[in-house]
Length: 175
Image 1: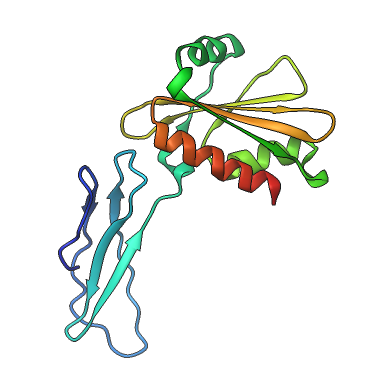
Image 2 (image 1 turned 90 degrees about the horizontal axis):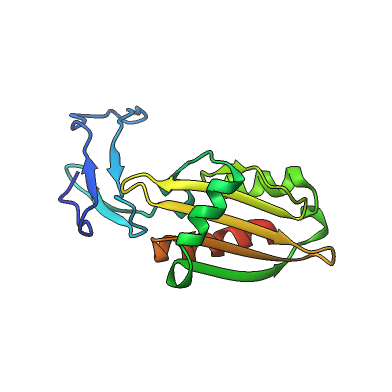
C-alpha cells in the first residue's frame, strides 16, 4: 500500500505486503478502515513493482451505525432532546410497492443498520441506532398517510449523518 491520504480521524489497518503473485494467481488480504463517524472517503494506493492503483472508499452512511433497541417511551424522550438543528425532515410519496410493513422495514434496515422501535400506531415506523465511534444516537421516524404521502425525520447530533441518512432512506423507499 502506498501512503494513504486520509481526512482527520480516519485510520487504516494495512494488510501485510504480498511478496509476489504469478500470472493468474490471486491472494486474499484483509484491511480495516475506521471512519470515525466520518462520511468522507479514505483514499490510498495499491502498488505493484511497476504500477500504482488509486483507490477511494466512501462508507455508506447507514453502515456507520449499529442498531439500538429501546421502548417507544425511551424513543420519544430521546427524540425530544434532539430537535431544532438536530432534526432533518423530508416529505416523499411512497410507491404502491412500499405499502406493506414488511417491505418498509426491509428497505429501511437494508439502508441503515438500525433497530426497529415498537410503535403504538400502524401508520408510523420508528428506528434507532448509534454511531459506531462516538455512540451518538440516530433516531429515524417514517410517518405514512393513507394517500401514499409520507415524511421521514432523522434526529441526531451528527447533522451530516442525519442529512445523508434522510436522503438514502428516501431513495430506498421510492425505488
